Length: 311
Image (cartoon, rainbow, N blue to C red; front, top):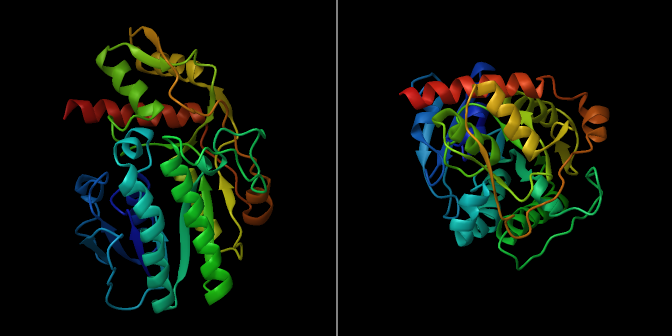
């Protein structure tokens, strides 16, 4: 089996690259390194079956040879990245998804789109089920990411209905683990970087907004199960264990043994107040649910960041 992973040198993409190489697949990793890193795939770069193409997926894509799967994971994914790169984010969601679907069509390959819980926006329904259409401001600053992914879902389903491509759409909820960038602006790497260096931990708003965090190996397992199931409609993959960001900050202080104090800053515009997946469909259709306890995942990630800061 042979696959193309766009964004393959990113946080999630690099874990997928290693996983599928372990399954004996050939992996073509494509990345333009705007937010991905060669360091993320350094451990697999010399492995048999791995190849790396530096390319921007918003431009025409050429991949020689057959492909069985196309996994489209290319996109800025943290608020800091997509607020700094709004046009690039929209282009990779629109042109990039169009181009990768074109590759899947030409190669007669199956296609998996990495969508996001952000398609639900600042939700009015809690927890979020796949049949909820979301509460998104299309012209707000966060809309560049939300609407890019919503368009990507729409064109993926259009290719499925019109061209008969066997597609999958995964709505990924907050995921964490090794290879996240310390400066990517998301809560876990930000809190861990601040705690490990003794800097004040910055909590936005009063910290009462909630998130649900899953460890990256659970996500990879969910994606693998989704690829094997005849499920074309979107499906949530996330950990339903919900916590406030203030509780997360306190947990990380405890796990790191840090003496950092917590400071509060104004809440960003349209920052979601709640986020929790309903994973009933994943349980029923994939036999999936998260296995890694959030506390254990945080401990493993703290160890990785601590080592990263030493080198």
